[in-house]
Image (cartoon, rainbow, N blue to C red):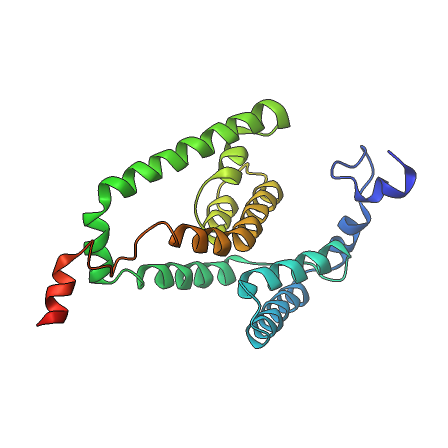
Length: 212
């Protein structure tokens, strides 16, 4: 490896530490926690002010990673910070399940289950290829390809021993960015071929209700 890049090596040589590791040793405690919370708050406010797509997630992630990798900040998330955050996240997801959504999900459950199994199977195949070709442990490979929200996968990975957190989050972030940029265009293209749920040709009862 070239001499200038040794400090950024993921696996430092025996007996040597990376410069960013030495920075983390000098920093910590209340200062690190305060800096982490300040970064989260400022990044979130800026993301909302400038209306950045998915900015509440992406801006703190990019800013925090940049500050930590340059040695300007040591990200510290103790348990007393993570537990309320996980609780709020769970409430936010659960409160979106209204009775109407639950009834619709029950009606569409056969197709939902089938599509879920197909996505899980495809993710398993990709994870298996990562284990074979990328020298990645099976659990980290599975979580890195697992379907679901990046925030949910982050909670699972951070609370599971032996998981390569940096690898999992890097893969999930790449997937999230790809969906962020390709999803809207793909949805508009599919909307041209898939009838709307309000189309009377699909639900004749809608046209009868309008006529009455």
